[in-house]
Image (cartoon, rainbow, N blue to C red; front, side, top):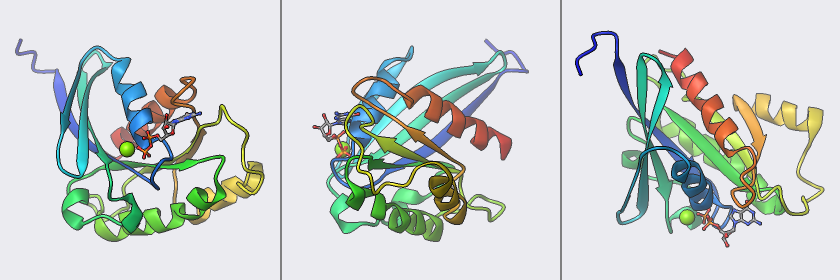
Length: 182
Ligand code: GDP
Ligand code: MG
């Protein structure tokens, strides 16, 4: 079909955070529930593609880049970040150490990629495994809001890849922020 109003967008979104926090589980949960999916394993990175009928005129091809096995370095190469226009940083809400690593991941992101206009890419924080008992040291409420503001996150969601909580909502929210920048 060649509907001139119909737009197709390709978005590269990074999924980063410490090992074992549930990055791959979140991606799989999210992608499996939509109409179209495709996986391809590559050295170091898993790509998941999800086709989203965003609105009547817009189809989004969302390419999620899920790091695998390199988390322990706490940073990624510039090549990995190249052309990304959004990011999800994931931590495990039951493990304070993974929350402490969040600022490091955010710094790495902001140092290595920016939007064409020089602004930081929109980044949403996911506190995953909310089906389990949370670590009381992980900030909540106003303290979390302050953390998000100070570190330039555009949003925060408590998620569970296991029980399917907050996954779609967080992705949809990030996409709305990405689209706002266009
Ligand atoms: P990654 O290293 O960040 O990609 O983490 P994985 O997706 O491989 O998940 C690490 C472990 O956490 C696995 O055993 C998952 O089954 C488990 N896991 C992931 N998400 C959740 C969740 O939402 N709740 C619970 N209870 N376990 C989870
Ligand atoms: Mg993984």
